[in-house]
Image 1 (spheres, rainbow, N blue to C red):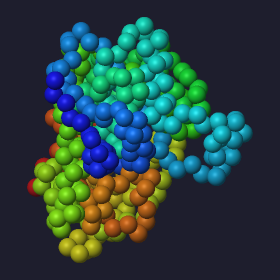
Image 2: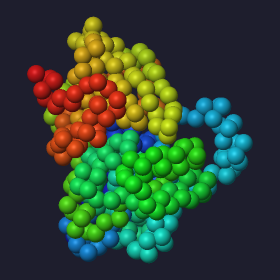
Image 3: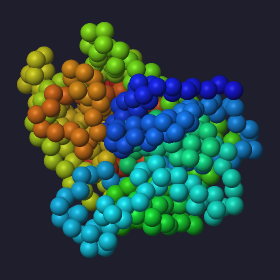
Image 4: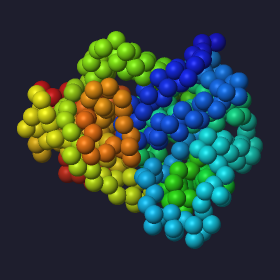
Length: 379
């Protein structure tokens, strides 16, 4: 059985750094992911993943994930939460435990025991949260995910593109409130209901869905993405240790374009409908003097303009990293005054299909912009 094992804290941090990079600004906070896996490592458990071909075709897999907004909570919101008795004293489930509880709830509801779990997306908390929740149940994680990045909405996944069902879906918030979405008209309705549940829970819910056979999982999985994240996170660390330019090394490894480097001079954000929305403005310096980049995000980055010209859009990948260290940032962490590099690279091919662009392209997000592959925009 092919297996990758994370044996040390350095391994774990390398892996989660790579997940954070591919989270494109979303996918949860990196330190939450570190906490999830380090607690399992300290408990003596093996942090690992297996090749999907090592599970039988008749195995049962499920996909545990986080859903909701990662926006910082304002004092006004904390006061509102407290009026419902939802506060630090009543918060009983950290991210790992609420995802693990959602696995329990869906196993009980479906009457099926899950043989393996699959990450929904790549992200600093989302991916390790899936692995840790599987470990709580003694369930292995397969090397791959269903998006190749992080995404704001559940339809933006390979099972949707292949016509497989997401529901039934379990959802558990940090206060122990439990919901089951038994049936739904379509993916977007499940997304809407799930986000409303997370709004009511004032943050991220732990959810489990996508109950498939091993055969179905093999057909829709984006393979090897966990191993890729480990490699990317290690590359960032080692580039710094060896005195190399980590941004240049990342661009080479990802076949990416450095769209700009400069100072984050303006951050505009809004927390609504269970998503974290906004714009980052990066004022170029050095060789990028005179170039102003603007990046729009809905949980994750989806459109980048430079001097009002579109240079990259989803489904292609836009990442913001520290221009000196290459360390990736999630959107809640990014702050005015930071020195930033903006990189863009190709999406996986399936999301460049007509159906993929329809669900993850700029027009889906309400912009009057046609999707053009980044390599064409860069010509």
